[in-house]
Image (cartoon, rainbow, N blue to C red):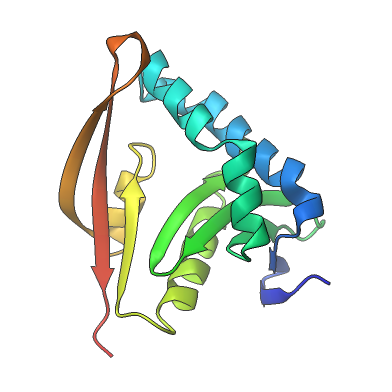
Length: 164
């Protein structure tokens, strides 16, 4: 049974089921393949693809951490994974970007986390970094990982604190 967590302006966010593994994987990989090459070298893109593999996504779905956002036509447009107080794997399909879905998913994830925690943590990719900064996140760490082909993946760990 799907759990509907948010409905607003004819958009819905539902907890993913294992039978939706291919859908979550498609949203994730399609976004990485289409968007990330504009920001990262090939080795870093390959790293992202390997990191967000079927095994990791499946494990997260089984543990109830993955959500899918649907538009008013019931088309899946994005996904997010929430692990404790961390937002992971937040992706919006390229054709649905710049239409408010990313902000909707981010707000949903923040609201879910802030029920139990005072701080939201995430690793910010370059394409999404400005969105997080606008929403009050601050950079607390910067990392650089050597990937394939001697390329580097650079990202920031960001937090948003809420006083309750």
